[in-house]
Amino acid sequence: MAFIPDMLDMCIMDILQQDARTTNKEIAAKLGKSVTAIFERVKRLEAEGYILGYIAVLNRNKLGSALVAYTSVTLEMHGHERLMAFEQSMDGFSEVLECYKMSGQFDYLLRIVVPDMEAYDAFYSNKLSKLDNIRKIRSLFVLSESKHDKGLHLKTDFINKIEHRTK
Image (cartoon, rainbow, N blue to C red; front, side, top):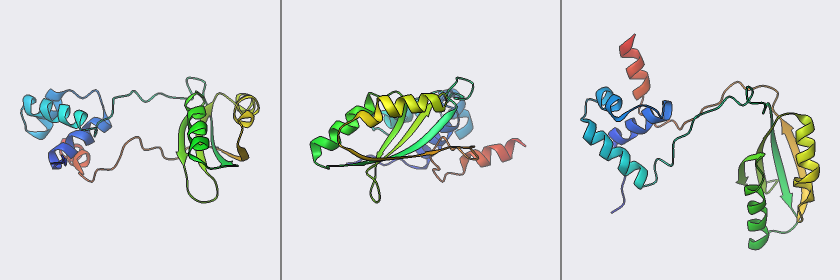
């Protein structure tokens, strides 16, 4: 039988999305459960593939990666081997943080993060445009960022309730 997370599991994931360093003890206290119960649920969520990993969200501007480009790529040919070859190429480019196969006007959408326009030009000229099977490349550059959610909205409303109680 397939595992389906219940509301308690959703609350656990909601808490961990907000701060992955939250301990099982802290989660247990917030949810009124035992540390062992929370530990077991977190392990099951990991084993079932609901929690894929834990990361620190870094400030790209402070680390010298200020330019973000969304680049659409249209391929000449669309056979399985050609699509896989393109995706494998993207895996090898550290500048490409996300690669999505799309429907519609183009085949792939890339999120590219580099220090500046000069670095983007070098990536474009020396890597991306040199791939075979490329028909068209179009790039849009981010001027400013007004919203950047880091997690999914699980509709638990848990975080809002906790913040409301502590005020």
